[in-house]
Every structure is written in C-alpha cells, then in structure tokens.
Amino acid sequence: MRTKGIIVQKYGGSSVADPGKIMGVARRVAACGKKGYDVVVVVSALGGTTDELLDLAGQISKRPSERELDMLMSTGEQVSVALLAMALHNLGEEAISFTGAQVGIITDSTHTKAKIIDINTARIGKELKSGKIVIVAGFQGVNLDQDITTLGRGGSDMTAVALAKALKAKMCEIYTDVKGVYTADPRIVRGARKLDGISYEEMLEMASLGAQVMQARSMEVAGKFNVPVHVRSSFSKEEGTMITKEVKAMEDVLVRGVTANKDEAKVTVCDVPDKPGEASRMFERLAKADINVDMIIQNVSRRKATDISFTVPKKDLHKTRNVVEKAVREIGAGGVEYDENIAKVSVVGIGMRGHSGVAARMFSALASEKVNIKMISTSEIKISCVVGKKEADRAVKAIHRAFGLGKGVRKS
Ligand code: ASP
Ligand code: MG
Image (cartoon, protein in one colour):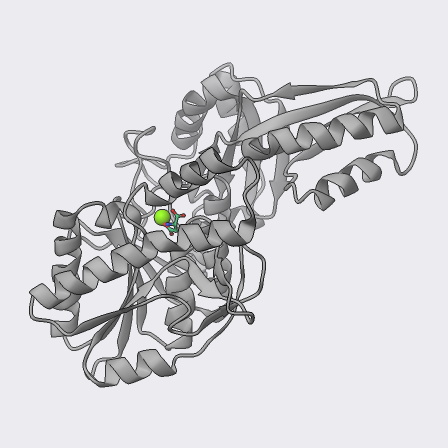
C-alpha cells in the first residue's frame, strides 16, 4: 500500500490504439505510482475494436442475441488490459490485469446496457495492498447468473467512475485524445476554448446532446456520489477539465457550451385524428420496442387532425418505421414522413436557470445565418433546436460567437 490514497485512471481506445501508445500509457501509470498513489487503471478496447466486433456479428446475424453480443464485445477490453499489464512488467512494475467479473463488478441483466448494482472491492484491495498496480477491463461486468454484461457504448467511463466511488479514490482521471471538455467541438469551431471546470449536470447534458467526451450515464453516477473527475489528454501533461458539483461562480456563465448531434432522424406522422389516446398508443408502442424518442412536437389541430413530429436515434429508424407504419394504419392517420438530414444543435449552462433571453439570443444567431429552425425543446439548463444537417456546423459557429464563448472573448 502506498500512502497518498487511490487514483483511478481510465484510458480510452485512442490512447491505447497501438503498442507504442500502450507503452506510453504504461509510463504514465508507473509515474503516478512513483508519486505515492495506489493506481487502479481502467482501459477501453484498442481504438476501433468494439466497432469491428459489432461489424463481425452483423456479418453473421441481422439480430444477434444480446447476451452473445456482450460475450463478444467484452473480449476487446480483455486484450488491452493484458497488453498493458505486460507493458508495465517491461518497466519493472508489478501489475495485474482483471476482467470486470474477476473484480466483482456486479450488474443487472440488461445486456448491452447493463447497470452496475454492486462492486466487491476485496480483490482489488488485496492486490493494491501487496503493492501492485491493478488494471481492470472497462465497459463490462457480470450478472448474478455469471453471464457477462456490458455497460453501453463508452461504458469504460462508467467503470472508472463506479470504481472511484467504491474505492473512495482521491480522483478519477479520464485520459483521452483531447485536452479536456471544450465550449464546442474544436474540429468545428476553431476558437473553441477548453473549460477549466464544468458541473456534473452540464456535462451530463452536453454528453447526451452530442459532445464526444464522457459517457452520459457515467455523469449521473459521478454527480450522485460526488466523484471528482478530471478529463485530460493522454498525450500531454497539461491540466484538463475538472467535473465537479456546481459551485456558485459557475452560474455567472450563461452558456457553458454548444453541441451538435447528427445521429437523430425526424419522423412526422400526418393527420393524426385529434382524439384523446391516439398519440399515446403510438408512443407506447415505440417505448415497448425500446426506441428512445427524444423531441416531440404536436401542431395545432386543423380540421380535427394534427401532425406529430418526433426524433429518434438514426440507428433505430428501421425499427421505428415498422412500429409507426403499423400505428398509422391502426389509428387512421394520414401518413408518415422521415427526415434523416437533420441535426440537433443545443446550448447548455446552469447559468440559464436564473436568466431569461438565452433562447432569444440563440434564435437570433440562427436567423442571422438564415438557418431555419424545424423543432425546439427546452429544459431548465438547455435549449435545443433541430436544423438541417448541412447547416449544423454553421449554426454551432454562429451560436458560439453569439454567446462570446471563444478564445480571447469575454465570457457572457
Ligand atoms: N470499447 C467500448 C466502446 O467502444 C467501451 C469504451 O470505449 O468505453 O464503446
Ligand atoms: Mg470510448
């Protein structure tokens, strides 16, 4: 046992994409141990591996069993933990790798998006005590029947946060290929600024709305248990972004960041009979089919019929078609239209709570770029607009500018 406490470090797929990078990670991990911390490392599969495994499954079966998908996908992380352990041994460090099941990460049985229900930290504690660096496969656990489960895409973040909580770690460090969380995707907005800090709630929203950093669900757990998370680059020493509970000063900023999500499609059901119960029948069906409906709008009723539009993840569009087209016939609606060329552009900030005018400023930024708004939805700390996919980048840039989020600009 070293003296300074436990640090959980998580390395994403791009940080362990090849042997050279794995050696780099090993050096970083070893350095943390040398500083006097007990280190628990969570690793993702080598970059691209999980997608390749899913693709393989797709070549065998159109609808593979979810239990077997978990069996398959969990192998990716098993490769990377073993390689990292070997890399650490090369550096003369004592290290040992484990699967999720081996270190007692117990989940429910919702294959491909299981929830962690308990972690038995005895084994990890024992290995740390004997001076070893402990490496845990991210993204996976085991249910009470001993079946392997996975925690949803990006689930290694969840493993790291949950382990940090269970082990009462000093810090949960998330190493990735960007320097932290930005005001907007720096590949789209050149002047995007790295944030020093962001609240759990804001990060949860931004992750759900398309920011490519942090698994959204992991932020719910981090927030609930107040686990300090530091998102930083595995290729630089620079400090990244601290994710913490909200502090007063955070409210001074109206908008923390702007995101775009291009993975949704819009469905419009036309001429739905305007009677109680019709819409609910359709949405019940969608829920039963496990389709996550996001924005919903209903137009004012003309001639006793109304149009209802909603968005669904593009990957669920096929399932959605089957469900909706059946419902359309049943309830006697006029027809259905699909639009895959959309993007959802959002602003997020806890500062919005106490201020008005955020929506107006966002809409006028879009208007000045002649970007047409197709749908709008709001919550306490976010506003989202659906726009044409082609206009998404232009929309994000305009909004980023309108809220003065860029480098060298005073914060609004
Ligand atoms: N390898 C898994 C994925 O690609 C888990 C992770 O990277 O966090 O989703
Ligand atoms: Mg990942």
